[in-house]
Length: 184
Image (cartoon, rainbow, N blue to C red):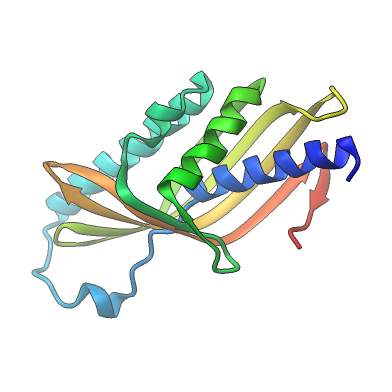
């Protein structure tokens, strides 16, 4: 494999990683959630605001290229599932994110909550994450990757804080240097 192809492969993997986190699955089927007490609008709004704050903190960690801060809201058993069904553990996700943040010139991300449902101590959150980064390839040139990922996240309330336990990619679109990339 040529050096430039290896560099682009790393950029794709890094963009996929952010598509998982900012780009990650958290969708537990409704049948697993089972009926729970109806939540008040105030409880739902408070929970949504706390989870939105965690997404914003993750985006700020990306800007600082700080992998530990970007992952502090994830449970130890966190799993990410890409749109093809490949499961990535928290440690694998961390390794990929660490590689990207170590080599990136810059990363900016923004996550928007599109749908939110609260089920007791669980929340199902549909998000759209937009990530733009500058990263050198093996050709020593800086490449710009832009990705937009839609995913379902499952959050659980543990020890009085919301933690991301699962992320499932629904769709993603990636460009590198303005050219669409297609995952094989």
